Amino acid sequence: MEDHNAPPTQQIQIAVNIETSPTTTEPVNNVVVAKQHLISQILIQFHAGYFRIGLSLCGQALLWKTLGDGEDQGDSHITFHVCHMLPPTAFVLLWSIALFTLGALSVVYLLRCFLHFKRVKAEFLDHIGVNYLFAPWISWLLLLQSSPFLSPKTFYYLILWWVFTVPILVLDVKIYGQWFTKGKRFLSMVANPTSQLSVIGNLAGSSAAAQMGWKEAALFLFSLGMAHYLVLFVTLYQRLSGSNSIPTMHRPVFFLFIAAPSMASLAWDSISGTFDISSKMLFFLSLFLFVSLVTRPTLFKKSMRKYSVAWWAYSFPLSVLALASAKYAQEVKGGVAHGIMLGLSALSVLVSLVLMVFTALNNKMLFPGSTSLNRHNSGSME
Image (cartoon, rainbow, N blue to C red; front, side, top):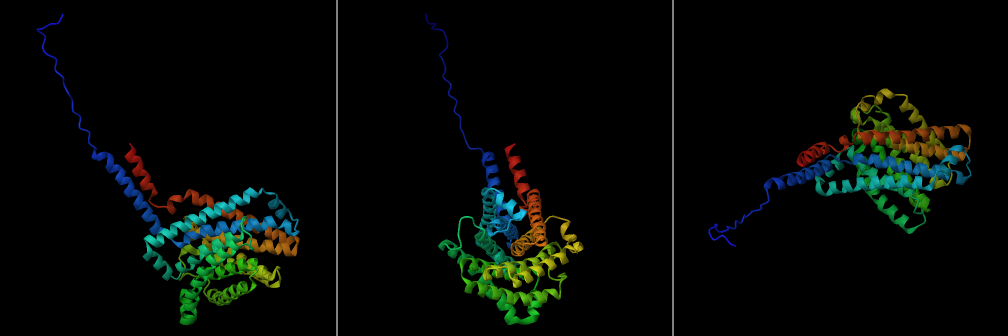
């Protein structure tokens, strides 16, 4: 029975106006801006000197390939035997790490060329920075020679050799042309240990060409590199301290004195087909320079106080010296030669591993600004 005296039921409608709160988009926009700023800062502070990392890893890959092939060439020494017993996947993994690292560095520098071309141009005009422009092409040539997938007789090997060698020749025209036209006074002003990278680039191209069977091209690059190495070596030998051309933190680049004659011995070995007297003389020169440097630790004392990417300058010369010692041991087959090879190879691997650890622990120094971005992200999530 209905109650007619009850008040009528009122239907209440609640209208909810849903609007996007500005506080929900502002943190997202701030994060995007912060990430863009971080990328820009990385590209600004990135320079060709970072290719020392890729150069060292590629040198290690070629070293391990040479040691692994030693027993196939009739040398049954324990070092070659142990390296030959390692699973093939271990070398492929090392080669892949070197490929990934060098590819990542190349992509970052390519972005720097597009977005910060003025800084790249300034680096090209700098008497130290221009020499590191050889480093990526040297790295690619070393990676090509150590490739487990490409044979020197294949068409792809030839194409890649041209791709990596032509930029070296272009830089040769720029650098050697200045030395030739502007004379001795200009060379004495701009010459520094990093200038040897131009020589190493020619020798790396020469070695790769000889493996393809292109003896004339190999001789051309070898003669071009060695002629300028003689001039450069005498110039640098007269002002070895380098205090007026190389900053204290960059003194590890003095180890490039070892790399040039070591690479020359490897290049001549590829051209002649044997580690003959000329290759041995160049190897002995690099060995003497190595002893001269390691017996003067005070030269590098200040540069070792704080981690820097310049530390990677130790690894590549040691890898190339170990490579030359391996070729020497394969030729001589004596106890002393194998002892030198074992010591240098172990030292090269140890230095590379230590540098990897230090680089991983000091990655904030390689990518400054990442700390502030992480702090901003954590704050926006609270």
